[in-house]
Image (tube, rainbow, N blue to C red; front, side):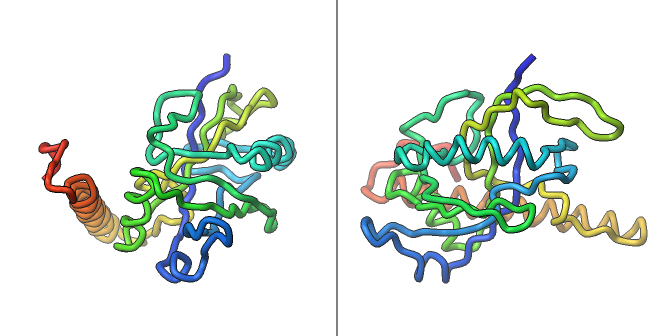
Length: 212
């Protein structure tokens, strides 16, 4: 049975990219980074074959050409892109070995402005694929099956790319690493909430009093 499959990949955006990368037509920021890596066990224990991604990217190219390759800020539990939450649009991609490198335009929407502000304040974000498909247990991995259908990519917090994690050699180091990681995540959330509040309350009226 098909189900919603969400997989996160770390997406590094620098301030320099925001300054230098601009769309020649709209002037919006253009950023580039890895959307997915094929033929490895990802952070969710899933495995995507290269053939599967090549097929889906060939289909997705048509969506890009139709100017409809949009994504949201944060993941909804939905098979459709909610227009009021759109933050970006994918303008192109290329293969670099087993990595799919995407070219993404950050849109001047409410969610897009929040994404841009987060990046400008050095908040780490992830890019996350959203698709429908079924899984099959093969040894220690869950292999994504041929019925997989890519829906879009969204920007999210806390990227789960396994390559991002340190592997300390002692139990003490493991405990310290976990504490530092939690502290860093809390600071990221606090900064994100502050930025969101400033943007939404900039005109003197704040519709979200619960954000501190």
